[in-house]
Length: 171
Image (cartoon, rainbow, N blue to C red):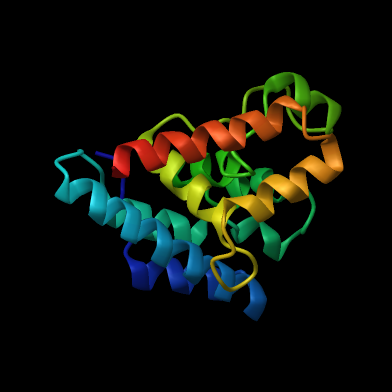
């Protein structure tokens, strides 16, 4: 089994990488919301690793200590390279919407950056509903992405599909 990071260790990693206070606040808020979703799903009998969801959500934006641009997921994966499961969360949480074709257009490595595991999807969704430090709802993310890319862009559809999938699972 891959090595797991405790909540305390995750916070220490963020601190050691000099994450700004606003990034830390955002990460804690995303972790809280992601953990709530994971706990609810586990109570419904859905097999989900609640502890991993919480710690990986804490670390999802660690790349923001290097850049606030679209490449923060890639930078986060580099920081977390010794922890592959956490590195994948860093790469795949960015709106939960970047295909390999879009990645190429954005100057990212040409591969899909879509969440695959349930845990990755929960974290990406929690990130989509959290603004800087509070829950703002999926509508704000849809509006933001839609205003940048157009409401008919496939990325908007993927955000809505992820939202629907998580809501369906949570009942």
